[in-house]
Length: 190
Image (tube, rainbow, N blue to C red; front, top):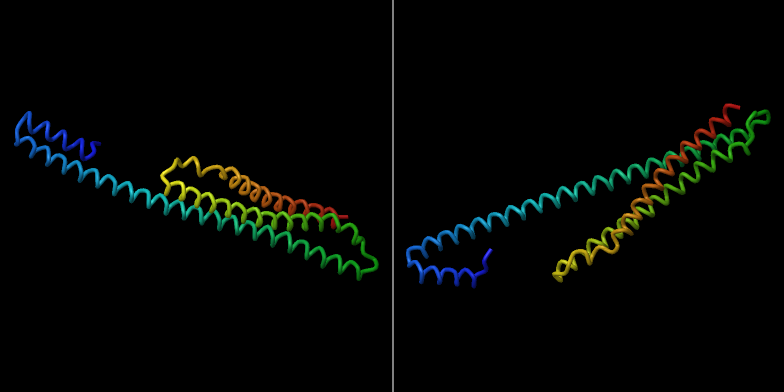
């Protein structure tokens, strides 16, 4: 698209070569082009607003899903550990029990490790969110200065690393719960 100086030079050239009537037609065409350009810019702005709103809602949904999954693994492992401790307390009062308290140590350890992994998931999620926010601030600062957006990307890998570590901790917490259940079942089957 031409800037104002180029457009004025173009119109002056046309007026001198072709006459005044065509300048009026060109002015109308230029006004029409400006209107179309303005409409195009407004449409792009609205599309970007919609995209940002959709991205923000998706991000909120992902965070809520992760939070709920982390709460579930924490509660599952904690409740299972509490159940085993209750069983150990009951066994200690029964003199003729087939199960010894020492046999419950292995399943209890799995549940405790599940709780630790769940807490690790919470910490990694915090650092991931903190890094995500920091990246956003850096990108805004870079855009405000009119620099290249790639300059604000050096911490993107750290953000992804924390997020992947949080997911791994959550998965490990679920695996610890399953292993603890299997070991407890093996002890109780004897």
